[in-house]
Length: 507
Ligand SMILES: Cc1cc2nc3c(=O)[nH]c(=O)nc-3n(C[C@H](O)[C@H](O)[C@H](O)COP(=O)(O)OP(=O)(O)OC[C@H]3O[C@@H](n4cnc5c(N)ncnc54)[C@H](O)[C@@H]3O)c2cc1C
Image 1 (cartoon, helix red, strand yellow):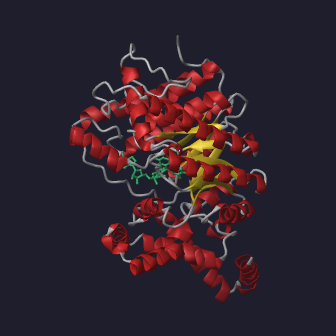
Image 2 (cartoon, rainbow, N blue to C red):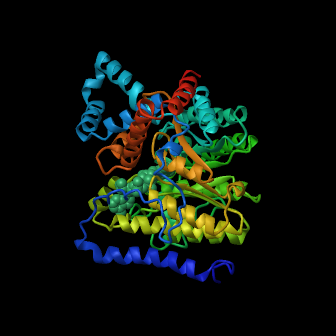
């Protein structure tokens, strides 16, 4: 039976699937392709091909109107420092070196980090500080996605501890302004030991490839593979789960359930992050189990994550969506490009197998934009949701234009644009000014705990081609404009503005 819903334009489905196949074809032909360097960020172009302005990032005055000059200077300075590659490389080397075992060095380094990148990229050390950040964002017309920043728990005891923090996080949303928190973020690696996720992923892979192989513990879920998915992680039949492992898996389901229940008390949906392919099948399995359990209403309360850099992303997303449609379940996806490219490629290379990542960056861009178009079309006239999690201006503009075309409004709660706290502020404000619902993803936690996250951000922001380049340029332009306005003809105008800013800084 066809999986294609009669309401889905054939053209769109064909285009999504052809993108997947095109990507596959590229793989076979790509032995000579060596262009793995990220393409430069597009030059600021605010007009679409047909000339309409979808959102504005040139008018820095209106873009940064809600940002105080002091904050703007601090942000521009931090982004400029994190763009200097030798500084970032030295910091990363220092963080991983044995020098950090020397008490004084550690104290000095942590202190510097706390007052620079930590303050810039992290929303607070606990739910109270993060709540203050949420209120500030809410006053600027933005929402927050709360992400308790602990990654990879190794045993049940640490999972229990993190679960308590996640429950506290979900609870904290109830004392914040209604709708100011768009999502509570959950990493399955924080509620289930990583080794178990690896074992479950291998078993799920084996089951998909061998229809006679049964998993007695498997609960109702949605499709997590397609024929094009990577299966090289499990080359031999994995041993069945032991009684203890089955029990641990049950505990992990319970932990996820506790967090979801608490979050739904405040009517806040949950989004589950994606990680690397060695454990992602188990993450998807638990995510879609939760979808089946909770997504019975018109609005999805559980969102999974699709990484468009994977060659099988489009096809998998399509199969999951269509299976959910058949069950009458509204599903929501967070769409990202993906953050584990180097390790995925390295693993594939070491095993001598084809990389699961698109061979070129344009393959990833096409897949991302294709998946976004597919989902926007799907949710335009049916229940479902899409979080467009990106800093890429072209993808942002494309999705904003499509959303307008499909008549998806802010009130429909079907589309949320999202970017990381401290990044892509120009795009954030541009989308907000254009009337879209926009969230900042807010990692929080004590400085030592959040270090892996900070190191990833430092790596991502370094160099002139990084995605923060546009922000740096626009912020510098705005600071120049404000300085000119203050010393030039606009003294009166900027005087008022400076007074307002002084107030906002002291609040
Ligand atoms: C709100 C939010 C939530 C996120 N959640 C997750 C998550 O759950 N899981 C996760 O894995 N990531 C997550 N990310 C990170 C995300 O996957 C990206 O790493 C990051 O956002 C950069 O992608 P971009 O869409 O902003 O695009 P851009 O700024 O255009 O960046 C593109 C980047 O993609 C990389 N790239 C991808 N494919 C290729 C390729 N084939 N060849 C060369 N380079 C390639 C390059 O490094 C390049 O720099 C999240 C990001 C955001 C904003």
